Image (cartoon, rainbow, N blue to C red; front, side):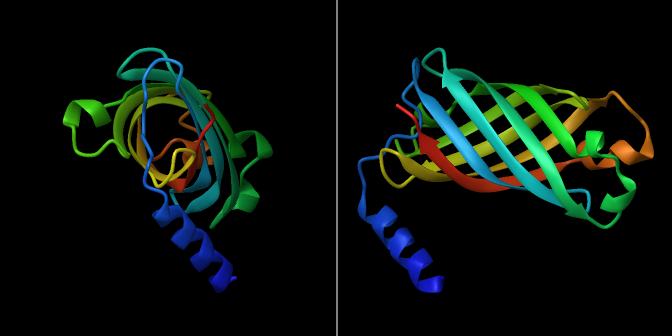
Length: 161
C-alpha cells in the first residue's frame, strides 16, 4: 500500500499545469474525512463557480465512529449543507494552483462558517483541507453534539471540468 501511495503522489507532483479555481463554470468535487468532537466520518462536497471569485455548493457528511457513537441515533450521524465560498486564490495571487476559500454554510443541524484551502497538483487532481465551526445551533440536544461542533476536514479534490 505504501508503494502505491508513493507512486500516486510522485505522479501527481510531476504534473504542474494545474489551476485551483478558474471562476464561472468551474466545478470542484472534494471527497475526504471529517474529524469532529471526538467523532470521525466521511464527507463529499462540490462547489460550482458562479463568478470570478465566488461559488455555491453542497456538502454531505456521515459519522462512522466516535467515543459515544452508539448512543447517537442515525439521524444525527448524517448532515447536509448548502455552501457559499469566496474563492480568494486569484485575489491573493500566491499561486494559480492554490485556492483559499472562506465561506458560510447552512445545514440541517446548524448555520456556520468554514475556511478551506485547495492545492491542485494537476489540472484534475489536488488535495483540500477545511476548518468549520457553527455560529448558530438548531438543536441543543446532547445527541446532536457530533454535528454541532467544530470540524476538521481533509481529502482529495477533483476538477470536474
